[in-house]
Length: 98
Image (cartoon, rainbow, N blue to C red):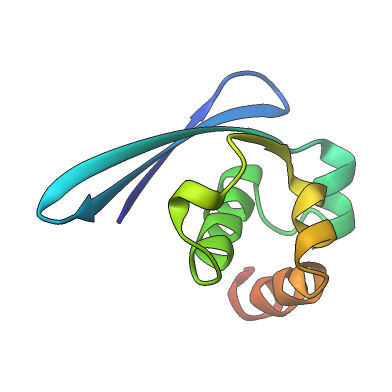
């Protein structure tokens, strides 16, 4: 699985997920919104938005297939479906932030 993150603006990102399915590459495209307030609330701004998005997709793909993930969402939406997400982010940041 390959993840490409493209900044589309201060808070808006395009995310391309390339995955292998039956020996064929499948490309899925997402629009993700991460505000500065979201970043601070989830990480106390200890990491950048790209890394948070990368973690979020890893988190989501461990729980559901790529085809089930909403095509456009705000980062905080994840916790509506997965209440453990904010705590998982905090743990990950504590282990990985410099």
